[in-house]
Each structure stands twice: as C-alpha cells, then as structure tokens.
Length: 180
Image (cartoon, rainbow, N blue to C red; front, side):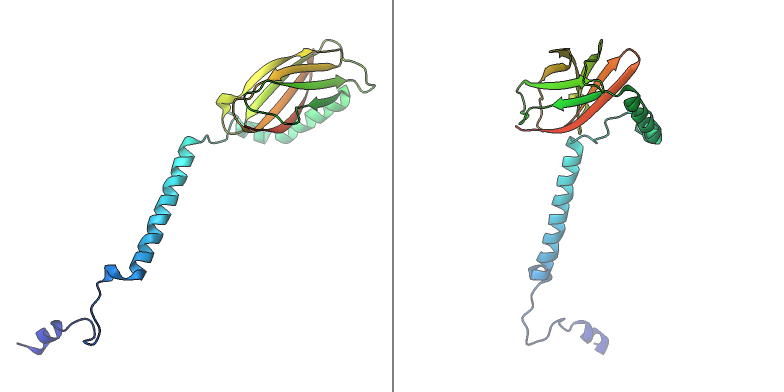
C-alpha cells in the first residue's frame, strides 16, 4: 500500500481521546434548539397575523391621507363658524355585552340649545371593521342626546358622534376601552 492510502485510514481524533459523534455535542443540540425556537416563534406570528385583521378600516385611506390637512382646516373653520360646544359623557367603566348609556350635550356658544339637530353615534373597532355600528341618538332634553350602546368585543373602540343641522355638520371623537 502506498503511504497516501495509509494517511486516509488514520482516525480523525487523537488516539488518547474517545470518539464522540457530532450529534451528541451540546453545541449541535444548542444550535438545533435555537433553530426550532425561531421556527416556532415565526409560525406563531404567522398564525396571529392570519387570524387578526389588518387594522386598515378605511377603504380610501390614500385619498383621505392626501386630503387630511385640507379637511382638518375645513373642520376647524366650520367649528369656528358654528361655535357649537359638545361634551361627550361615557360610562365610567364601559363593559362588553352590557347596554350602557352614552350621552352628548350640544349647545351653541352662548349655552343655548341648537334647534333641529340630528345626532349619530358611530362606533369603530380598530382591528375589525365588521364590528362597526351606527346608531341614532335620541333627544333627552333640548341640549342632551343619548343612546344605549352594546359593545360585543373588549378592547379599544373609536367613537364618533356627528351632529347635523341642515347642511352644517360637526363631530366629536373619543377612544374608549371596553372591559370584559
């Protein structure tokens, strides 16, 4: 035999060490464990992403974003011109599946009632547009409007109350948290 073939038959470890296969090394198991953990975390994130909504509730978000500052200027001009004062009263502890009273006080700049107004109560779920709803508020008095709202899911909701008188319109918004 040639000396080259004898070199190929030499053991890969030192003669005084016991041979340990690579799969028994704690380093190999540690790396494999890290890979398994990363795959599990990614699978969990994919699952959560697939069952939750994207959070984009407005269909024409691009157009609204482009016109945001224009619309905000118009809103401020309308608020200054009308001079209406609105105060939204929400329950201290809004609860899920419990009809609770939501009230809106609407007066002019001198504190007098505003005649012939209609008030709408809009509730928007931040992560699921299918849960959004609109209700008409009824007059309790000449300045106070109310409705009983029942929220089906816990978490954050955006409320928008729109007051209309003829062509004039003004709104007030509030974010609330619904407890279980």
